[in-house]
Length: 567
Image (cartoon, rainbow, N blue to C red; front, side, top):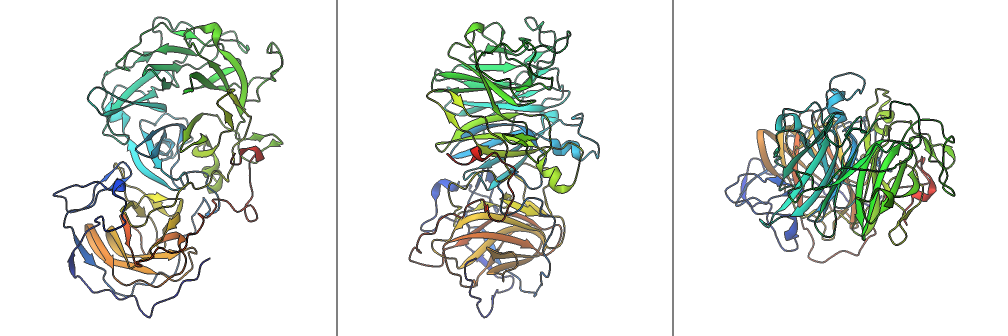
């Protein structure tokens, strides 16, 4: 922990109006903000918080509120990067990169958990969205209310997304989802967070559709767009009526029409041995990768792939081809990801569950996004609510080989520092305690108990700080603490406002060092933190610090196969 020097007082004038906003002062990163004229408060679009135009900022009250306790309901520690969310249950991930951020979408298990039942998926009619630019601090962007956008659906599970710049010059996002087990729907947007629309008003794929005679559950879509701008969709699930067999030819793939909303080929079967569900597609350097989840049946009988071992139970496996509509061209490559309950040594320490993955390259590193029951396990629950995870994917794009690896609680490392001198979303965090959200797009972080807190990892205070500005709602106090939640506050804001207001703390305790982890500690329940930023305090750039590792192997237990470490 770095040394923090307390000032004699943190002086704040009361109710003073200052006409200065979250503007781009010298050194601010222009690509992290977006101008919105005529707005009295910043607007978060995607990950960005727009800087206000001549916004009124109120100086902090100073009523001497004392925060004498901090929340203990932190189920994800500050030492482990998994799960990616400390407070939202979600599963079946897909991802797309846009404007320097990785957007991850998943089945909204949290909606099911709100029903107070076991997770039978029956109440899920929404999806969730997260994004990151550093792989460890994530913004929760809220829910996509698929049931309102497309009221004809049964449910919305297991999304898959692709994007493409269209003739209008805009990037269009095509988000395919499972309509329960009965088919596939698609919604579209020109922004990765929305708003979304239903261009078809009906399913794209449905049961008993011509050409799908051997596909009992045409769900779990996987989409990709190749280098020629052509879209491809895979899907399928279920087992044949005759029982356990190695070769079912149930999963299907087809070429999408130019509009990404129709088909431009027949459905072609993929011979995926021990197939169960969780189809996904990737296109990498001219090769199509089809991935899926293996079934639970006993292994051995009927296995006919010489030199390739049978896949572990409910593991993920893959096939590759360069000609996806040639059924005979698909080459089975083997398993690449264990079930969460298993690793190379056998029992992983995590709970067994269904399996669903998506892999992607982001900033030159290959990652696998997947789900486990880890968050629920940490909470002591057993209802089957899943949580998203991120690990490294050891893929050799030249040979197409993917080594068999396992889920880890440690997760991945931070790839860039957080810039404190631009407006950041209040929902940006590595972990938290007693934090919830309203059911809106781009929600604020909202305290649910006294002493609630959020934790942002690896913030680069290269120029120190002279003030803290927060957009808040509610009554109470938010303190800024560095590196240790029990440390003295370096700044605070106090407020009493029923609508969002921007509050400034003018005085700042001096602190050493450059790279710090930041806690935002809430005095009371029902306080909302919509956005935050710091103002530079030094003219000279401080000596560079390394980004703190997202792990501490000496002080945390790992549930990982060691081969999941960074390549």
